Amino acid sequence: MDGKNYSASLVSKRFWFYETKQYIEMLNDGMTSDEIQRLSENENVFGAASNSRAKEIFNTVRRRVNILDEEIQAIFPKLNIDNQKIIIFISVLLLNDLILEFMLEVYQVQLQKGQMQLTVTDYKAFFSEKQRTNETVASWKPYTYNRLGSAYKKYLLEAGLIREDGEADLMTLKVIDPKVLQWLRVIGRPDIIRAITGGLQ
Image 1 (spheres, one colour):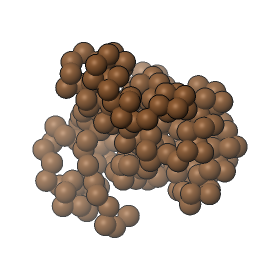
Image 2: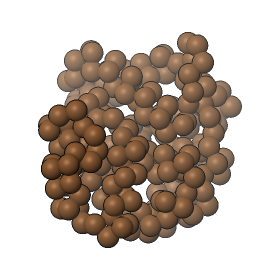
Image 3: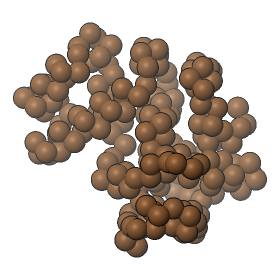
Image 4: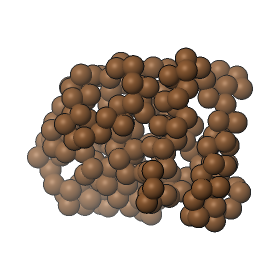
């Protein structure tokens, strides 16, 4: 994917499932983003450890939810918890080109081959290739690749797409709700369907 904006921002940002779910629920209850922000600042509704963390959680969650349209926000509460987590992961994929490419070039390929595991080597090989082909990625310090690999693993774990099993993480194929699949097709993102399902749905 040429012309992409690669970022290492996921190193410092967590999955924040419950915070995102809470934000969507408040929107669906008729609250505005500004009202939610005031609750975050004045009442710490997201349970952040500090004011700066509260601001980071709010800004990240708002950005992720804003990339989802009102249709998917409306059906979110009706989805099972597995699909709610997938929706939040999709919002991350929509905002972050690099982790999307990891899903397409590594996760999807493993699914299609029937090799249902990821190892540290898979993450390292991905970043080595990006380092070779992209000036931005090449400029990062070595520890950034390690931290990003750990962050990607945590995101996949929290999204329910892998589970730890010794040295290799086992990939867990999820059944994506038909309404979510249809929404991704309507917004023109069959690549995300392939990234998560390997084209098996």
